Amino acid sequence: MAGNNAKKERAGTKGLTFTVAECGEFHSLGECHEGIGTLEEAVSIYRNIPPGRMNGVPSIGIRIHKAGEPESEDLVLDLVSGRAINTGLIRYVPEADSNPFVWEAVRELIKIFPEKEVFD
Image (cartoon, rainbow, N blue to C red; front, side):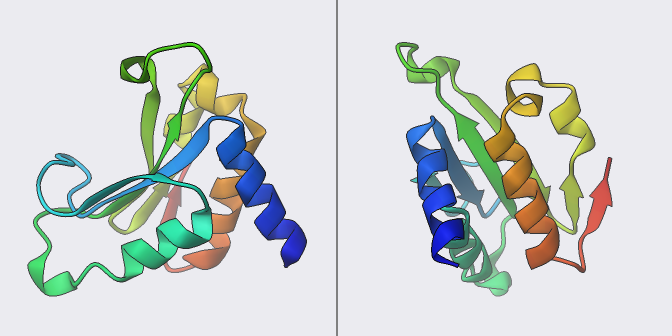
């Protein structure tokens, strides 16, 4: 397990961080967490959003930052949205599709959330 944590921490150093939003469509509605360094931390935050006050469909996403570029150019993409894990969308975004850390996160999310439907 220590090897897995090291991989997740390295993902953050490669410009990949995670986001969790209470409302995936409009991150400004409800709780929104950005700059999360590990997938485990993102999942914990996601699971701790009280369902009684959900303003929308909760999500876990990624943010890919390219060194030397302004943050406004970062790629932000939701991987988990409600009851689904959307892998098909990743294939349409070259920066995400070619990033091995993104696919590693997707594989982990599928294991963590076996009840969610995977859309490819």
